[in-house]
Image (cartoon, rainbow, N blue to C red; front, side, top):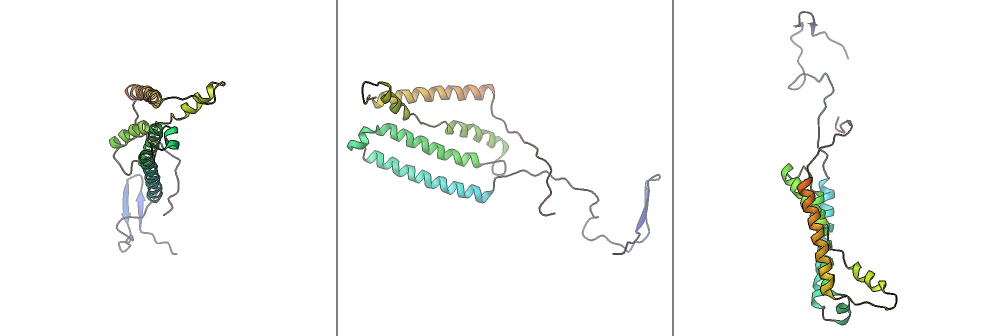
Length: 195
Protein backbone atom coordinates (compact mmCIF):
# COMPACT_ATOMS: atom_id res chain seq x y z
CA UNK A 1 0.00 0.00 0.00
CA UNK A 2 1.14 3.50 -0.75
CA UNK A 3 0.63 6.26 1.78
CA UNK A 4 -0.92 9.43 0.42
CA UNK A 5 -0.89 12.70 2.30
CA UNK A 6 -4.42 14.07 2.32
CA UNK A 7 -4.01 16.97 4.70
CA UNK A 8 -2.36 18.49 7.73
CA UNK A 9 -3.74 19.26 11.16
CA UNK A 10 -2.33 22.27 13.03
CA UNK A 11 -2.84 21.63 16.76
CA UNK A 12 -1.86 25.18 17.78
CA UNK A 13 -4.33 26.87 15.47
CA UNK A 14 -6.76 23.90 15.67
CA UNK A 15 -7.18 23.86 11.89
CA UNK A 16 -7.33 21.07 9.33
CA UNK A 17 -5.94 21.78 5.87
CA UNK A 18 -7.04 19.35 3.13
CA UNK A 19 -4.36 19.04 0.43
CA UNK A 20 -5.89 16.47 -1.90
CA UNK A 21 -9.66 16.85 -2.42
CA UNK A 22 -9.87 13.79 -4.66
CA UNK A 23 -9.46 11.40 -1.69
CA UNK A 24 -12.78 10.00 -0.48
CA UNK A 25 -13.34 7.76 2.52
CA UNK A 26 -14.96 4.41 1.82
CA UNK A 27 -18.39 4.07 3.31
CA UNK A 28 -20.69 6.74 4.66
CA UNK A 29 -18.43 7.96 7.47
CA UNK A 30 -14.72 8.45 8.21
CA UNK A 31 -12.72 5.40 9.34
CA UNK A 32 -12.60 4.63 13.05
CA UNK A 33 -9.63 6.12 14.86
CA UNK A 34 -10.20 4.53 18.27
CA UNK A 35 -11.53 1.40 19.91
CA UNK A 36 -15.29 1.45 20.14
CA UNK A 37 -16.67 0.21 23.45
CA UNK A 38 -20.25 -0.95 23.21
CA UNK A 39 -22.26 -2.18 26.19
CA UNK A 40 -24.27 -5.29 25.50
CA UNK A 41 -26.75 -7.10 27.70
CA UNK A 42 -25.89 -10.77 28.26
CA UNK A 43 -28.94 -12.78 27.45
CA UNK A 44 -30.08 -16.34 27.85
CA UNK A 45 -29.84 -18.17 24.56
CA UNK A 46 -33.28 -18.45 22.95
CA UNK A 47 -32.64 -22.01 21.61
CA UNK A 48 -31.52 -23.13 25.10
CA UNK A 49 -34.57 -21.51 26.72
CA UNK A 50 -36.81 -23.16 24.11
CA UNK A 51 -35.32 -26.62 24.76
CA UNK A 52 -35.67 -26.26 28.53
CA UNK A 53 -39.22 -24.95 28.14
CA UNK A 54 -40.12 -27.96 25.96
CA UNK A 55 -38.66 -30.36 28.56
CA UNK A 56 -40.55 -28.49 31.27
CA UNK A 57 -43.80 -28.87 29.36
CA UNK A 58 -43.13 -32.61 29.02
CA UNK A 59 -42.52 -32.80 32.78
CA UNK A 60 -45.77 -30.96 33.47
CA UNK A 61 -47.67 -33.31 31.15
CA UNK A 62 -46.16 -36.30 32.95
CA UNK A 63 -47.03 -34.81 36.36
CA UNK A 64 -50.58 -34.19 35.13
CA UNK A 65 -50.82 -37.85 34.09
CA UNK A 66 -49.65 -38.92 37.57
CA UNK A 67 -52.18 -36.56 39.15
CA UNK A 68 -54.98 -37.96 36.97
CA UNK A 69 -53.93 -41.54 37.81
CA UNK A 70 -53.79 -40.74 41.52
CA UNK A 71 -57.22 -39.08 41.55
CA UNK A 72 -58.82 -41.82 39.45
CA UNK A 73 -57.42 -44.67 41.58
CA UNK A 74 -57.50 -42.99 45.01
CA UNK A 75 -59.84 -45.69 46.38
CA UNK A 76 -57.52 -48.56 45.41
CA UNK A 77 -55.86 -50.16 48.45
CA UNK A 78 -52.21 -49.37 47.58
CA UNK A 79 -52.96 -45.79 46.54
CA UNK A 80 -55.17 -45.24 49.60
CA UNK A 81 -52.35 -46.41 51.92
CA UNK A 82 -49.94 -43.89 50.40
CA UNK A 83 -52.03 -40.81 51.34
CA UNK A 84 -53.46 -39.83 47.94
CA UNK A 85 -54.27 -36.27 49.05
CA UNK A 86 -50.67 -35.71 50.10
CA UNK A 87 -49.50 -37.26 46.84
CA UNK A 88 -51.72 -34.78 45.00
CA UNK A 89 -50.17 -31.91 46.96
CA UNK A 90 -46.67 -33.16 46.14
CA UNK A 91 -47.54 -33.45 42.44
CA UNK A 92 -49.02 -29.93 42.46
CA UNK A 93 -45.88 -28.67 44.21
CA UNK A 94 -43.78 -30.34 41.53
CA UNK A 95 -45.86 -28.67 38.85
CA UNK A 96 -45.30 -25.30 40.54
CA UNK A 97 -41.56 -26.04 40.54
CA UNK A 98 -41.78 -26.82 36.83
CA UNK A 99 -43.65 -23.53 36.28
CA UNK A 100 -40.84 -21.66 38.03
CA UNK A 101 -38.43 -22.86 35.32
CA UNK A 102 -40.30 -20.71 32.80
CA UNK A 103 -39.89 -17.69 35.08
CA UNK A 104 -36.20 -18.31 35.91
CA UNK A 105 -35.38 -18.40 32.20
CA UNK A 106 -36.81 -14.98 31.46
CA UNK A 107 -34.31 -12.14 31.45
CA UNK A 108 -34.17 -8.48 30.48
CA UNK A 109 -34.27 -9.29 26.77
CA UNK A 110 -37.74 -10.86 26.99
CA UNK A 111 -39.52 -8.62 29.52
CA UNK A 112 -39.37 -5.03 30.76
CA UNK A 113 -37.48 -4.06 33.93
CA UNK A 114 -40.64 -3.64 36.04
CA UNK A 115 -42.09 -6.95 34.83
CA UNK A 116 -38.73 -8.63 35.50
CA UNK A 117 -38.79 -7.55 39.18
CA UNK A 118 -42.36 -8.82 39.56
CA UNK A 119 -41.46 -12.15 37.93
CA UNK A 120 -38.49 -12.56 40.31
CA UNK A 121 -40.81 -12.18 43.28
CA UNK A 122 -43.36 -14.60 41.81
CA UNK A 123 -40.70 -17.21 40.94
CA UNK A 124 -39.33 -17.14 44.50
CA UNK A 125 -42.83 -17.67 45.86
CA UNK A 126 -43.61 -20.48 43.42
CA UNK A 127 -40.31 -22.25 44.01
CA UNK A 128 -41.05 -22.76 47.72
CA UNK A 129 -43.16 -25.77 46.81
CA UNK A 130 -44.94 -28.46 48.78
CA UNK A 131 -42.54 -31.22 49.88
CA UNK A 132 -43.90 -32.32 53.24
CA UNK A 133 -44.54 -35.99 52.46
CA UNK A 134 -41.28 -36.84 54.25
CA UNK A 135 -42.92 -35.92 57.56
CA UNK A 136 -44.98 -39.09 57.37
CA UNK A 137 -41.87 -41.23 56.93
CA UNK A 138 -40.03 -39.49 59.77
CA UNK A 139 -43.00 -39.84 62.10
CA UNK A 140 -43.32 -43.53 61.17
CA UNK A 141 -39.81 -44.32 62.44
CA UNK A 142 -39.88 -42.07 65.52
CA UNK A 143 -41.52 -44.64 67.74
CA UNK A 144 -39.18 -47.64 67.93
CA UNK A 145 -41.82 -49.85 69.55
CA UNK A 146 -44.29 -49.66 66.68
CA UNK A 147 -43.51 -50.57 63.10
CA UNK A 148 -45.92 -48.06 61.65
CA UNK A 149 -47.44 -44.91 63.06
CA UNK A 150 -50.52 -43.87 61.15
CA UNK A 151 -50.82 -40.15 60.58
CA UNK A 152 -54.18 -39.04 59.24
CA UNK A 153 -54.26 -37.03 56.02
CA UNK A 154 -56.04 -34.21 57.85
CA UNK A 155 -53.13 -33.88 60.29
CA UNK A 156 -50.63 -33.86 57.42
CA UNK A 157 -52.69 -31.21 55.63
CA UNK A 158 -52.66 -29.05 58.78
CA UNK A 159 -48.86 -29.47 59.02
CA UNK A 160 -48.44 -28.55 55.34
CA UNK A 161 -50.82 -25.60 55.73
CA UNK A 162 -48.91 -24.39 58.80
CA UNK A 163 -45.57 -24.63 57.01
CA UNK A 164 -46.98 -22.81 53.99
CA UNK A 165 -48.33 -20.10 56.30
CA UNK A 166 -44.89 -19.70 57.91
CA UNK A 167 -43.30 -19.63 54.44
CA UNK A 168 -45.82 -17.04 53.27
CA UNK A 169 -45.17 -14.83 56.33
CA UNK A 170 -41.40 -14.98 55.73
CA UNK A 171 -41.81 -14.14 52.03
CA UNK A 172 -44.16 -11.22 52.76
CA UNK A 173 -41.80 -9.80 55.43
CA UNK A 174 -38.89 -10.18 53.02
CA UNK A 175 -40.74 -8.31 50.26
CA UNK A 176 -41.79 -5.51 52.63
CA UNK A 177 -38.35 -5.04 54.26
CA UNK A 178 -36.07 -5.69 51.28
CA UNK A 179 -37.94 -6.07 47.97
CA UNK A 180 -36.13 -7.63 45.04
CA UNK A 181 -34.56 -5.15 42.65
CA UNK A 182 -32.89 -5.65 39.34
CA UNK A 183 -29.16 -4.94 39.30
CA UNK A 184 -26.84 -4.92 36.31
CA UNK A 185 -23.35 -6.32 36.76
CA UNK A 186 -20.46 -5.10 34.64
CA UNK A 187 -18.14 -7.78 33.28
CA UNK A 188 -14.61 -7.43 31.92
CA UNK A 189 -14.33 -6.13 28.36
CA UNK A 190 -14.28 -8.77 25.64
CA UNK A 191 -13.32 -8.67 21.99
CA UNK A 192 -16.36 -8.67 19.74
CA UNK A 193 -16.47 -11.96 17.79
CA UNK A 194 -17.63 -10.12 14.64
CA UNK A 195 -14.65 -7.73 14.74
